[in-house]
Length: 505
Image (cartoon, rainbow, N blue to C red; front, side, top):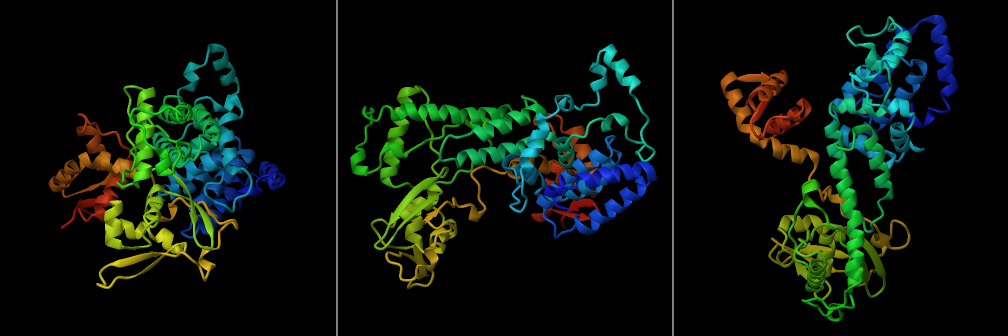
């Protein structure tokens, strides 16, 4: 049932279509297909990526068998209902649209690209799919539409009008799983911000192409903030070139870069318009003096060019390319700034206690112990217990007797990890953003449950929509509310019993 078998299966699908025309066993096909899906696909062992790719394959196959969309309506609903219960569905859909695989390395072909091309192919099929389309047609087109009218098949759900089946829009059906295009756009915006902040160059051609295709489907206004983010990268490239053109000219607070041994040619800055980007995760770290001087000089030159604008550095963001030289080897790494700061502390002092190192870098002890594991796992540092047994000591490994830990992943001693192993991103996730926005409704929800004892999800949702009309007005979806209430349950502020929320006793 792999999605990359759709094309080779086309003759079989055509045979099935002709078979159904003669036998009329449409209902049996639907029942059999749904049963197979629930037994083989809609299980806890199947990844969300696999389910989504199979759903896309199902849409394409059933679109060939039944252009009216009746079968797809019946077969697709169990898949959509199951995917709504998975927390990573939105993230996987956005990944399918942006990297072509949905994070599934086992999928061959250009599955993600085919999804994007769905936005750009068949112009007549990419018009807005709103229910009011017919009212915008002129009289001639309305007459043509009326003359082409056909009754819905007998298997069709009588509660759903035929106009909803006129077009089989793959991306639109994926959005229907989420419930709101705004949620998908917000998730895409976060993923785009993460990708742009971790770029070591200004090559955004693929991101621009993706955005233009998404604008066709979602409209320019929905993607305006994403467009500004990409424009920031374009402006950053130009500004960066202009600043480097002034290297031979001393700034007002010129720094002797010969002493620091770091040239401004080694620094590329991404300058963002913070009001249009998702909230950025901020983590304070103390940079080495040479790097700090370099940033100060760059900011001064920026101010001279862009007066009165000034730079505010996010020192924990970006990537750093390092070349580590030891007695018997040279290694190259591309890492997050915090990893670079940690290892640079060992340039002049080969051994550090965890407490002293945390104080020097300006990190909490628990954060340091998590971050420094990157270098311990690479065999660059060794960890041991200190004499007082309450602290740890980290020592730089100058010479490797056992080089097994330093075997490069790609054979040339270059490691391109940027700290993703810690599961921490540069940008606040959509869930974190929604959680922060909905905190203002927490007291209102707790007050409702105090008065009514217990309430169902839809009743809480409708009550918030009815009474929370002042600034900020309640504009969240029921799925976002459910996620927020689940957080309150995990914090043991609420209980969930038989679909009813009540205060934790």
